Length: 378
Image 1 (tube, one colour):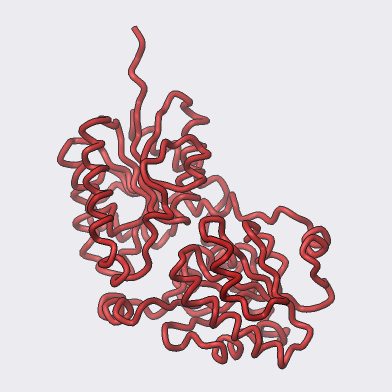
Image 2 (cartoon, rainbow, N blue to C red):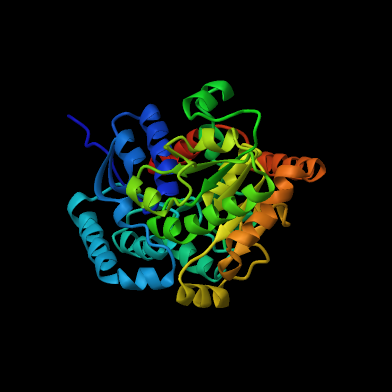
């Protein structure tokens, strides 16, 4: 008698979630190649073997106002995925971060007695901690990436495991320094700054113009400065080139880790990229800018002294942060300048980044996550 294939629904609505989910699926299939996956994700999940119903580039909206604008589409996706629970009868649902959609969707799975594993906790410590009560009622298992998250869930009786951060396995430059510099016509004897405007279209539109202005201001004081813009593959190249006023800057596609590693300092959109930059121990300034309405709403909800993940993990501000109206070319240049010119400051920041790196755990997080989830499935 042939056994039924076990099916898993996995949902990751953003670029960073797609990276981690793709690595998780790869590790799960190594341990059990008979598993079948479908859901919402991006190119990494597709490559790993997930049948995509919707792509992350259709789902990644930044800020409250932007989400409200797209509510009819989000509801359509939600309804279709809920119907898939009845049609496909998955054995397990894996939800990857993306709280606005996923916490609500966990209720649909719970109603149908389908166990839910939440892989990568939503940032409940930044928003409403009461959300942990809601999550606790709807999931079977929580897998977290930061050590400080464990107690938050244990206090509420949630079955929680800390695995470390999966980025420790993937954040590795591809090219040796000389190869990279030659490939992109860069001079290793001159300072290099990288611009990472984010993985969403709205982020690039809001942050890249200010980043480029900041580069121009810096160049007046550091004439030999070279700039590299890191482009992600889910955003059209034309968007970057339409914003690039300084045509001498280098636009590098899908080589983010090399761009960061071979730079002396970086301007980074708040989010996962700040952790990637920390792992590579490159000094940075963190930038966050959304629509004014979204910012006002967020200001009333977020209860944190720092918004950058690097500083949150460190428990203090170790790299500069610029928020909303503070994100100007002049301010960016002022914050970055000492990270390019002050040897003592550079050394201090790098030591703090090394500490953050160690707090993110040891390599092998994706494999550890896969083993935990397979035990849940059994």
